[in-house]
Structures are given as C-alpha cells and as structure tokens.
Image (cartoon, rainbow, N blue to C red; front, side):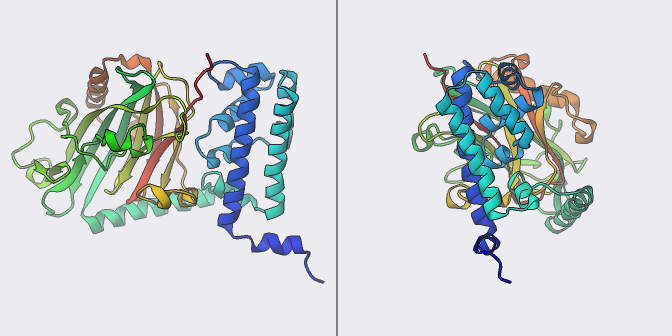
Amino acid sequence: MTAPDSALDSASIPFDRKHREIAEAAEALQHALSKALACVISGDLGARGIGRRLGVDKTLGSQAFRIATAPDAATIVSALPGTRGMRNLLEGLERAGVPDDALAGVRDAVTGLHGIFERTQASPREIATIAAGGLDSDTQRRHQSKIQKLHFETAAALKGEMLDTHLVTWFVTPARTNPSMASLVSLKMQRGYRTLRPLGPRLVYRGVAVDRQANSGDWSRVDVAKGTFIPSLVSKASTSGLEPGVLQVRETDDATLVLADPDFHVGESLTLTFADLIEAIGPIHAAPGQRNAELTAHLATPVRHLYFDVFFDELIPPVEPSGAIYFTAGHGVEYGEHAELRRFPAEIDARFVRNTRLPAAAKIDSEKHTAMLEHAAAMIDRPLKAFRCFRMHIAYPPSYTRAVVRWLLPEKAKA
C-alpha cells in the first residue's frame, strides 16, 4: 500500500519551509485581528480593555492582545488559544459589532493557519519550536539548565574571565526636540567582573551613539556593541577607589574604548557601570518600513545571570515586548528570513515587573542599582515613577549570543 501524495508531500517538507509558511500565516492572522479590533476599540489597545469590550475572560483577552501586538511570529504562535478559545474570540468580535468583512478576514486567517498546520503535519514539537524554541518536558528543562551551567563553567575556564551579573538597562522616552521620536538612555552594569588568570586589559565598554545621518529612525541599529560616543562611567554605581591602571581609555579611528584589568584591583573583582544618552533614535509609532522596535545586547563574556531591563515612559503608548536570545551577531541576511530558527531554546523569564528591585540572586548592591537608575532619570529629567519596567532574566546564557527585547510599534491614533 502506498501513502497518499499529501502524506508524502508533508513528510518531505523541510522544517525551515514549515516555519516560513506558519510564520506568514501567523502574521496574516495578526493583521486581520488588529484590523477587526480597531473597528470596535478606539485608542491604545490593552488586554483588559479587549476582554471587556469583547465580553471574554481576561485570559482570552490577554491572548488576543498578545496576538495583535506581537513583534514576531513566534510570539503570535505562542499566544494562540485552543479551538474553543478561538471560537469564543470570534463570537466576541461578532457581539462587539465588528463589520462582516473584517470578521470574515479573521475567520479566513484562522482557517488558513490551521490549514497549514494540517497540510504540513507540523508536530506539536515543531510548533513549540516555532513558538519560542520551547522545551517539551520538565526533564528537558532540567537537562538544558545543566548544559547551560556546564557551558558557563567551560567558557569561563577557556576564556579566563567571567561576570557574576550582567545588567543591561534601557530607558525609552519621547525626545525633547520631537515627541514623535524616542530618546534612549543606555546603561550597562557588570558586577563581579574578574579574570581567572592574568590576561591584561580587557574591553568592557564602547559608547552606543549611532551615525544619525546614515541610520536615522532605525531602531535595529541600537546596539551596545557599536558606536562612537565617549563612554561615561557612573561612579556611584561602580567599584569605588579604583587603583591606577584598572581602567584605560584608548582611541581608535572610529571609537573610544574602555578597557579594564581586574588584576590591578586589590579585590580582583569589579563592578563597572556606564551610561549614554541617545537622542531621537527612532519613531514611537509605526512608520513606513519601521514596524518593530528592537534593543539588543551582545553576550561575549561568560555570565551567571543576565538581566535585561527596559523602562518605558508612561508618555509613550503601551506596548507588549518580548525577549529572546539568538545565535547570531548581526543584522541583514544573517538575521533576516530565518532568524527565529536561531532562537536559543531556553526558559527565559520576560515580563513587566511591579518592583524594579533586583532579586537576591543578582547580588547587585541595591544602593548602586538605585544610583544607576537615578543617574539615568536625571539624564532625561524624568521621575522614575513615570516608567514601567519590562525585565528579561536568564541564568547562564550562552556566550557569543545576542539578547533581544523587541516590540511592535503601535499605530498612530487617527485624528
């Protein structure tokens, strides 16, 4: 007995093609759902507002909100409700008075997405991978955690340097000169930096200013590994009483670099914090050719804990960010069509937090952390209470990867 052609076809479809087709269908669903919600909800979208307007429970409202505001296909797929939940969502859209053509668009998009699942026979494991590189069981999670810790220990031994905690923090606020654009404060705290054998000066910081003439309005260029600003040490949030030779500044053709040598410090362990202000880097609302905003950090030094905080000013529209780590270092083709296939499969805690105080595991002095945040707020003359903090945390992230916090830029309200 021979298998039907459809089964043979689905079995022969490579995973990257399945991923591309599912991603395209997921984005089509996002477009259709966003259009439908805009018909019955004015102003900024919110999970609770969607739930109340559609008459559905808060979980389903949150899923609809995530689908409508997700910055990538993986987040859309991870937010998909089950068959019953999707039916309830469609009924809620109909009750709310969504026009027939917009409602039909959502139904067609849902049918199309599930049709691709069936036609490609994408397994739950494949779909989970597309949905964020998820791990299938507690056993896999424990095994992954052990591998990550082993990788950290091995990388530290081979490279001869390590960090206890790497804290990357960004403040996002409207630009003073143009409120439709965002200004940023970039902060980088490295706690417990030390070398395991004499290595000489090591690069610890570059400025983050970008070439505005070449990259105006391009969020994807906001990268802590590039730039030409003279770096700024935040003394109150760094090790005090540094001995001569611990820090060095060197000029190159296109940058000013800060190097550190922990061997020159009596404690042989350093906490270093740097801050830079970047004015009017990208749009606050969606613009032609600019759908997402993205902030990144390169992980080159073995680190026990990564905390990636993004503080959003209450003056900008609400967004729903997502956090991920990728095995890729740049942009363009390498980071383009199949970027999600390079997503690191790990348990990453990424969510808004009410209390910006770091957990005990971070082992960061609370006074130094507060001094860092106050320094950033003073640079943009905004009170700390005016910001919401989105935090991504992962223990033992692999070295030579790229941590990313990304969000879908909201549409500008119609006048």
